[in-house]
Picture 1 (tube, chains in turn cyan, blue):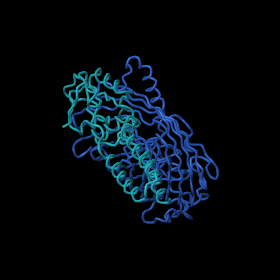
Picture 2 (cartoon, rainbow over the protein chains, first blue to last red):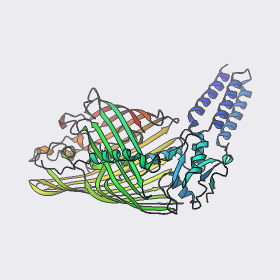
Picture 3 (cartoon, each protein chain N blue to C red):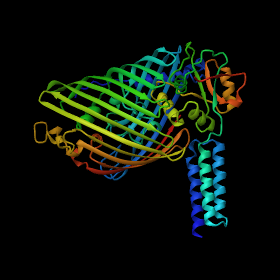
Picture 4 (cartoon, one colour):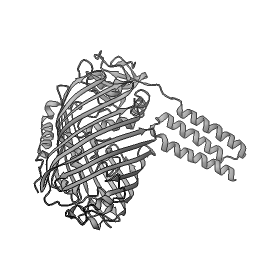
Length: 192
Length: 399
């Protein structure tokens, strides 16, 4: 059954590529990828006529392709200490702060930047959708500042709860959270 | 040979780090005020001919180890003191001696919502190209060894930092980011550096009063996907060879980089004009070098990269024929084989970022020419080979 075998291998290759290419996927996107391609593979293995299989394959592939580009989660909110009323609001300045280049607020207080680990999907999503910056470029920028002696790396927190707690406790802090996780202990910054 | 030797500031960086560690209870655990970072890398090389970082010719050389520690402390919100101490074992021209890469006081006297201006004084890093500031850390280099002609390993200390000052400014807006830096200072020279630069243990040549001026402008698009840099630097020294003369080198570098989700393309082009004007010895080298590197990010941990690099000492004689100009003359010691006048390097590599601390990389290169090949590792310039290949392996750790 050569045609079925070909479809099977196309689906199998697509699954492998999806795994390797999911550098910036969050868990939801990755699971979706996996489920849809496993479905594809079972269609390919099942005893359906080649033409039907091809149609199903094409339909599923395009659906998966669209799903990869469609946002599955909402943007994160930038948070700061409740007492910080002089927070900057332009995207360029926010980016400069998260890049660890600008290290004081307009009133002169020091900025303390909190981030989640690079491997955390929330961090990657925040970097790409809110900062509009590739996560690896952000990391390269921190490395450059650290190893040339012109700056420091941001403070890494291990969880969302720690992020909220430390931003709430540290004057001059800045961080990010899912909009659904916001509460009174932190103040959200609206980007202009 | 009389050479102005930069003295003993390895102790200064060590002092800074010791001071910081002792001041820990006072400064507290506030990571935004002070941080200590370090790195350790070990490489092994095999070459079919020519020695690269040790006796690699037809053998495996593990004579390339780098260990560094740096510290940074922020005082009063806008005053930073930072320093880095490095120990480097690199073939025959670096023996693991501890030294200071940089140690400076950085005063950021103006910082607003979308700009900052400051000045750095002390031993400051040279803002040269895209990679000079982080060339010692394996994770922040483009590959196991720096592109050889633009970022010559043999004269790394001269390129890396200077004792002087730097004035810098950064501006952020909808157009992206503009970073400007300029400064002067004394560049670091030593016996070994002179030997490397002149490809011989020159008898009777001495350099003194080393000066460098350097300026760089970088524009980054919003989000830093595009980066473009322009560097201009000038080195001058008083040269003494029978009579007093002057050595000057002017270097201009244009750098361009585009970063995408899955790949990155980097290219740097440089023109360097080297001139030695010492009485009867007149040496001119209008050089040129460039490289193009493509990185493909296969996954979060793995990347594959390929680079083509070329360099010539004389743009008007790309076959290296001007390297033989002193052969058979009074200055026979400046007679070199033609292959020292050019280099073409094609390489591919694979890099594995095991986790946020560990990294491993393996590379294979095919090279033509021996331009910028370390003299101290290959003392018989005429015994080197024109066509050679290289395999490299590196494991690195950082925190």
